[in-house]
Amino acid sequence: MNAMMTSIRRSAIGLGLFAVITGGTIALTQGITKDRIIEQAERAEAKALFEIIPENQHDNDLLKDVVTLPSNAQQPNQEPVFVWVARRDGQPVGIIMPTSAPDGYSGEIRLLVGIDMNGEVLGVRVTNHRETPGLGDRIETRKSDWVYNFEGRSLGNPRPKLWNVKKNGGVFDQFTGATITPRAIVKAVQRSLIYFQKNRQEIRERLNEAPPGNPKTQRPEVIAGELNSAEHS
Image 1 (cartoon, rainbow, N blue to C red):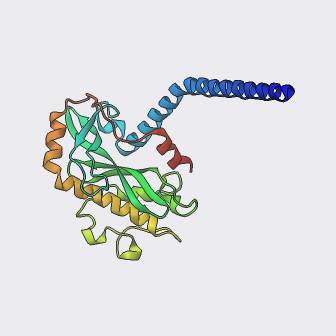
Image 2: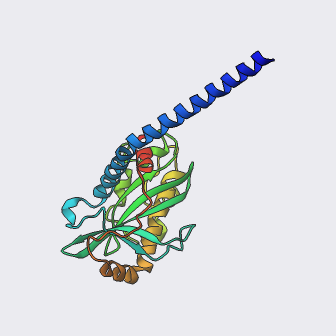
Image 3: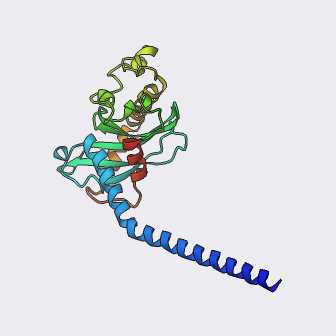
């Protein structure tokens, strides 16, 4: 009996030491890689933003110029909208708005929509999705140039009923074997334009109230994991 108890104690001590060492190793690894993860997040974020509004089109610090806009009634959570603001000579020239398409083929698709102050699309980039590789993932710029078709579009170009894929009477191409994914993106971009149009006056006022280049305390919800999953899924 004593031998058995001794064996049990040794096993318990061994397991305890193993747990302590494993936990310490994980904590140490996280501490070492934390700064690197933050740096990668900032790089990925900047890459997507500057693809939509290149640095030669504004003279402010786009990454830090973040403004809170009215809540978007067309989004499920209806929370306030946080956007990046591009300015030239202190005047806003465009915003980049995080939004989502909840009706993707494999679930929610997150994206960024850039809109100039006249309500025209500056660019669109997908930041997170789980769409089928080889089919729905053509919404990524590294897989196709499909998202570039939104540039220069507005609520009047095309007319509202034509904001759909061609299969459903619209002007936007669908993918071979995949209609749901592009249709979800088209509708999400259109909703962003509708939001901008309905809130245009208040948006202009809030952008003008915010000191150019001064970061707000809250930032749009785009992190490295989201951006990287879109680029490498």
